[in-house]
Image (cartoon, rainbow, N blue to C red; front, side, top):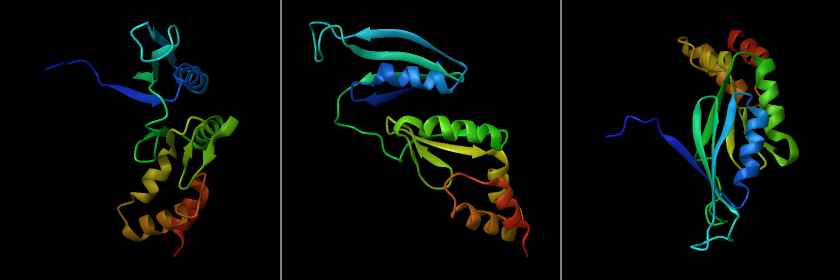
Length: 160
């Protein structure tokens, strides 16, 4: 049995190194690790990046240039718990720039198609409120939003 932490492998279509650089520009606590290149053993062009190791916010990743066979879907996403809306706004804007897309309920896709949940912690508190009425009203408000508006969710939760 291994006691090493898990590493998330992300499959890219030839853009793994670009993706790692992008994520390091968005998340300030990170670094690039080893980069493996294709050799004459293949299957990619000799010298092209096969894998790039990187770390952001203490989470280890490997970007694999595997080709177009397996694009990202919303079935896997990364949640970014944000201390406040200013932090959420930063990540929301950074991850949607240059071709990223807004989705619903604070979800975005970055320009590589990877899904992120940009979530102020208070939003989770509101939809998890022990009072089922407050939680339902906050959830109903959230379901109408793209970028989460905590003040609007709070107003909805408190409405009677």
